[in-house]
Image (cartoon, rainbow, N blue to C red; front, top):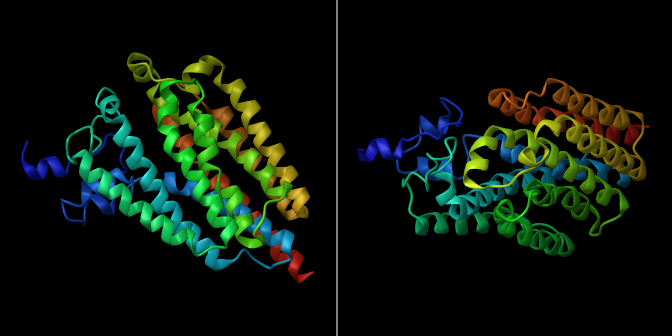
Length: 315
């Protein structure tokens, strides 16, 4: 394999014709793929609970809109920390990834990047995340640092438990606490309920995602809720997505949300119901499509919460 071909090796499920694979130097591309830059759905799903929490805090605090500076910081932090999480995951999983069809061309598994270089890249992304975190109040900084414990252990969970998606939920939903903490310097029942609802949401959508690898995971001995639920996945999603809608709705009520916010929760729940209705666990392409559609579901909720805050402030 030539040097150019090695650096231009695309991962099987990468977005085709992405700018990262067309306009960046060959030597940089493996690092961008390591951070999943060409697959923005990951940082969107990490970002949305942060934005929900910031919008919920705006409602509770009587502000007309979420703190714009905080929204920008959360965006930068989500991109950096999602990249760091993916890099850490690939460092730990490089021997597993080479055995799975969808992941065997990832930069570490395919030999495009050495482990030492990936570790240096991980440190760089972590420093960017830290630079974002220290812009917040002291309580939020400590809260953000605590989340690193979950991020570190998550990639190991699929080796020891059938519920690795729950640990992903704990990590990916942390932003549901951060937006509120950034606004008030404390936590209250509303963000805690939002956090619990977001965890249920993450377990649900990542179960759908994991059905893409169900057969390969069984061969290599990797555990997941997709394998655990199997043909009962639709029933499990009804419970998980139902819990997410109820818990998030309760958070909105506690924060003082009015009709617009609750309509947003209902629309969010309707989108999740559509995913359940469409689900076919034997169709990997459909599973990926439904998984990605959670960005739209999350944006619907964020926009409704933000609009509710604006209307209440103007009333």
